[in-house]
Length: 208
Ligand code: AMP
Image (tube, rainbow, N blue to C red; front, side, top):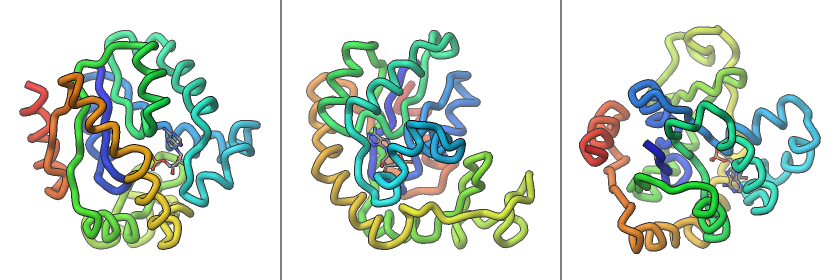
Protein backbone atom coordinates (compact mmCIF):
# COMPACT_ATOMS: atom_id res chain seq x y z
CA UNK A 1 0.00 0.00 0.00
CA UNK A 2 1.56 3.28 -1.17
CA UNK A 3 -0.29 6.21 0.31
CA UNK A 4 -0.18 9.92 0.92
CA UNK A 5 -1.85 11.58 3.90
CA UNK A 6 -3.11 15.01 2.92
CA UNK A 7 -4.69 17.58 5.22
CA UNK A 8 -3.97 20.74 7.17
CA UNK A 9 -1.52 20.84 10.07
CA UNK A 10 -3.26 19.50 13.17
CA UNK A 11 -5.59 17.17 11.26
CA UNK A 12 -4.04 14.17 13.03
CA UNK A 13 -2.09 12.76 10.10
CA UNK A 14 0.89 11.85 12.30
CA UNK A 15 -1.26 10.20 14.97
CA UNK A 16 -3.17 8.08 12.44
CA UNK A 17 0.00 7.29 10.50
CA UNK A 18 1.51 5.78 13.65
CA UNK A 19 -1.49 3.39 13.88
CA UNK A 20 -1.51 2.66 10.14
CA UNK A 21 2.21 1.88 10.15
CA UNK A 22 1.65 -0.96 12.64
CA UNK A 23 -1.50 -2.22 10.95
CA UNK A 24 -0.21 -2.27 7.37
CA UNK A 25 3.43 -2.99 8.26
CA UNK A 26 4.82 -0.18 6.15
CA UNK A 27 7.04 2.79 7.09
CA UNK A 28 5.65 6.16 8.13
CA UNK A 29 7.61 8.89 6.38
CA UNK A 30 6.97 12.31 7.86
CA UNK A 31 8.97 15.03 6.14
CA UNK A 32 8.37 17.27 9.18
CA UNK A 33 9.93 14.58 11.45
CA UNK A 34 12.86 14.14 9.04
CA UNK A 35 13.54 17.89 9.12
CA UNK A 36 13.15 18.04 12.93
CA UNK A 37 15.59 15.13 13.36
CA UNK A 38 18.14 16.93 11.19
CA UNK A 39 17.69 20.09 13.27
CA UNK A 40 18.09 18.13 16.51
CA UNK A 41 21.23 16.41 15.25
CA UNK A 42 22.71 19.69 14.00
CA UNK A 43 23.26 18.41 10.44
CA UNK A 44 23.97 20.75 7.53
CA UNK A 45 20.41 20.23 6.30
CA UNK A 46 19.10 20.95 9.80
CA UNK A 47 20.97 24.25 9.95
CA UNK A 48 19.57 25.26 6.56
CA UNK A 49 15.94 24.59 7.44
CA UNK A 50 15.73 25.50 11.14
CA UNK A 51 14.45 29.06 10.73
CA UNK A 52 12.06 28.03 7.94
CA UNK A 53 10.37 25.46 10.19
CA UNK A 54 10.17 27.88 13.11
CA UNK A 55 8.36 30.44 10.93
CA UNK A 56 5.87 27.91 9.54
CA UNK A 57 6.99 28.43 5.94
CA UNK A 58 7.84 25.69 3.45
CA UNK A 59 11.32 24.31 2.83
CA UNK A 60 12.24 24.78 -0.88
CA UNK A 61 10.97 22.00 -3.15
CA UNK A 62 14.45 21.04 -4.37
CA UNK A 63 15.67 20.21 -0.84
CA UNK A 64 12.47 18.43 0.18
CA UNK A 65 12.16 16.37 -2.99
CA UNK A 66 15.76 15.15 -2.73
CA UNK A 67 15.24 14.11 0.89
CA UNK A 68 12.10 12.12 0.00
CA UNK A 69 13.75 10.56 -3.07
CA UNK A 70 16.54 9.22 -0.84
CA UNK A 71 14.10 7.95 1.78
CA UNK A 72 11.86 6.15 -0.74
CA UNK A 73 14.93 4.40 -2.18
CA UNK A 74 15.50 2.59 1.13
CA UNK A 75 14.57 -1.11 1.15
CA UNK A 76 11.80 -0.82 3.77
CA UNK A 77 9.72 1.19 1.26
CA UNK A 78 9.59 -1.65 -1.25
CA UNK A 79 6.26 -2.97 0.13
CA UNK A 80 4.70 0.46 0.47
CA UNK A 81 4.79 3.59 2.63
CA UNK A 82 2.76 6.31 4.25
CA UNK A 83 3.87 9.77 3.20
CA UNK A 84 2.79 12.30 5.83
CA UNK A 85 3.33 15.97 5.02
CA UNK A 86 4.59 15.32 1.48
CA UNK A 87 3.75 16.42 -1.16
CA UNK A 88 2.77 19.95 -0.10
CA UNK A 89 3.06 21.68 -3.49
CA UNK A 90 2.13 20.80 -7.06
CA UNK A 91 5.86 20.72 -7.89
CA UNK A 92 6.43 18.11 -5.19
CA UNK A 93 3.45 16.07 -6.42
CA UNK A 94 4.82 16.08 -9.98
CA UNK A 95 8.23 14.97 -8.70
CA UNK A 96 6.63 12.20 -6.62
CA UNK A 97 4.72 10.96 -9.67
CA UNK A 98 8.07 10.44 -11.40
CA UNK A 99 9.42 8.47 -8.42
CA UNK A 100 6.51 6.10 -7.75
CA UNK A 101 2.87 5.28 -8.34
CA UNK A 102 0.32 5.67 -5.53
CA UNK A 103 -2.60 3.51 -4.38
CA UNK A 104 -4.46 6.16 -2.37
CA UNK A 105 -4.36 9.76 -1.21
CA UNK A 106 -6.24 10.22 2.04
CA UNK A 107 -7.83 13.63 2.53
CA UNK A 108 -8.11 14.38 6.28
CA UNK A 109 -11.10 16.74 6.45
CA UNK A 110 -11.40 19.12 9.41
CA UNK A 111 -12.40 22.74 10.11
CA UNK A 112 -9.89 25.52 10.65
CA UNK A 113 -11.30 26.26 14.13
CA UNK A 114 -10.73 22.67 15.26
CA UNK A 115 -7.20 22.70 13.87
CA UNK A 116 -6.26 25.85 15.81
CA UNK A 117 -7.65 24.29 19.02
CA UNK A 118 -5.64 21.13 18.46
CA UNK A 119 -2.35 22.76 17.51
CA UNK A 120 -2.24 25.23 20.36
CA UNK A 121 -2.62 22.38 22.91
CA UNK A 122 -0.31 19.95 21.16
CA UNK A 123 2.80 18.74 23.00
CA UNK A 124 5.50 16.40 21.76
CA UNK A 125 8.19 14.14 23.17
CA UNK A 126 11.35 15.53 21.55
CA UNK A 127 13.15 12.19 21.19
CA UNK A 128 10.33 9.83 20.13
CA UNK A 129 8.05 12.32 18.37
CA UNK A 130 5.08 10.92 20.36
CA UNK A 131 2.21 13.40 20.25
CA UNK A 132 -0.10 14.51 23.08
CA UNK A 133 -2.74 17.19 23.64
CA UNK A 134 -3.09 18.97 26.98
CA UNK A 135 -6.90 18.44 26.92
CA UNK A 136 -7.78 15.73 24.39
CA UNK A 137 -4.89 13.29 24.88
CA UNK A 138 -2.97 14.24 28.04
CA UNK A 139 0.07 12.25 29.20
CA UNK A 140 -0.29 10.14 32.39
CA UNK A 141 1.97 12.59 34.25
CA UNK A 142 1.58 16.23 33.28
CA UNK A 143 4.33 17.44 30.97
CA UNK A 144 6.10 14.04 30.79
CA UNK A 145 6.27 11.37 28.09
CA UNK A 146 4.36 8.20 29.10
CA UNK A 147 7.23 5.84 28.25
CA UNK A 148 10.49 7.75 28.53
CA UNK A 149 9.42 10.26 31.22
CA UNK A 150 11.11 13.05 29.26
CA UNK A 151 9.81 16.61 29.41
CA UNK A 152 7.28 17.26 26.65
CA UNK A 153 7.82 20.33 24.47
CA UNK A 154 5.69 22.61 22.35
CA UNK A 155 6.87 22.74 18.74
CA UNK A 156 8.07 26.28 17.92
CA UNK A 157 5.67 26.29 14.96
CA UNK A 158 2.69 25.41 17.19
CA UNK A 159 2.73 28.97 18.60
CA UNK A 160 -0.08 31.18 17.46
CA UNK A 161 1.62 33.37 14.83
CA UNK A 162 3.23 30.35 13.18
CA UNK A 163 -0.09 28.43 13.24
CA UNK A 164 -1.83 31.22 11.32
CA UNK A 165 0.99 31.27 8.77
CA UNK A 166 0.98 27.47 8.35
CA UNK A 167 -2.75 27.48 7.66
CA UNK A 168 -2.35 30.19 5.01
CA UNK A 169 0.46 28.22 3.39
CA UNK A 170 -1.72 25.10 3.46
CA UNK A 171 -4.64 26.84 1.76
CA UNK A 172 -2.49 28.45 -0.91
CA UNK A 173 -0.01 25.71 -1.75
CA UNK A 174 -1.28 22.36 -0.51
CA UNK A 175 -5.08 22.42 -0.76
CA UNK A 176 -4.90 22.50 -4.60
CA UNK A 177 -3.48 18.97 -4.36
CA UNK A 178 -6.93 17.66 -3.44
CA UNK A 179 -8.21 18.54 -6.93
CA UNK A 180 -4.91 17.36 -8.46
CA UNK A 181 -5.31 13.87 -6.96
CA UNK A 182 -9.11 13.81 -7.36
CA UNK A 183 -8.59 14.16 -11.11
CA UNK A 184 -6.47 10.99 -10.92
CA UNK A 185 -9.20 9.16 -8.98
CA UNK A 186 -6.97 8.66 -5.92
CA UNK A 187 -8.72 10.69 -3.21
CA UNK A 188 -10.28 8.92 -0.19
CA UNK A 189 -11.90 11.22 2.37
CA UNK A 190 -11.98 10.72 6.12
CA UNK A 191 -13.67 12.88 8.76
CA UNK A 192 -10.61 13.90 10.79
CA UNK A 193 -12.60 15.74 13.47
CA UNK A 194 -13.37 12.44 15.26
CA UNK A 195 -11.28 10.65 17.89
CA UNK A 196 -8.11 8.89 16.63
CA UNK A 197 -9.52 5.32 16.88
CA UNK A 198 -12.66 6.41 15.00
CA UNK A 199 -10.63 8.12 12.29
CA UNK A 200 -8.47 5.01 12.00
CA UNK A 201 -11.59 2.81 11.59
CA UNK A 202 -12.79 5.13 8.82
CA UNK A 203 -9.39 4.95 7.17
CA UNK A 204 -9.45 1.12 7.10
CA UNK A 205 -12.95 1.26 5.64
CA UNK A 206 -12.14 3.70 2.81
CA UNK A 207 -8.96 1.82 1.96
CA UNK A 208 -11.00 -1.42 1.73
P1 AMP B 1 4.80 18.99 9.70
O1 AMP B 1 5.42 18.23 10.82
O2 AMP B 1 4.33 18.12 8.56
O3 AMP B 1 3.74 19.96 10.16
O4 AMP B 1 5.98 19.87 9.06
C1 AMP B 1 6.66 20.84 9.82
C2 AMP B 1 7.37 21.82 8.93
O5 AMP B 1 8.36 21.14 8.15
C3 AMP B 1 6.52 22.55 7.90
O6 AMP B 1 5.83 23.67 8.45
C4 AMP B 1 7.57 22.96 6.88
O7 AMP B 1 8.35 24.05 7.36
C5 AMP B 1 8.47 21.73 6.87
N1 AMP B 1 7.98 20.74 5.88
C6 AMP B 1 7.48 19.52 6.16
N2 AMP B 1 7.13 18.88 5.02
C7 AMP B 1 7.39 19.73 4.00
C8 AMP B 1 7.22 19.68 2.61
N3 AMP B 1 6.67 18.60 2.00
N4 AMP B 1 7.61 20.75 1.87
C9 AMP B 1 8.16 21.84 2.45
N5 AMP B 1 8.31 21.98 3.77
C10 AMP B 1 7.94 20.93 4.56
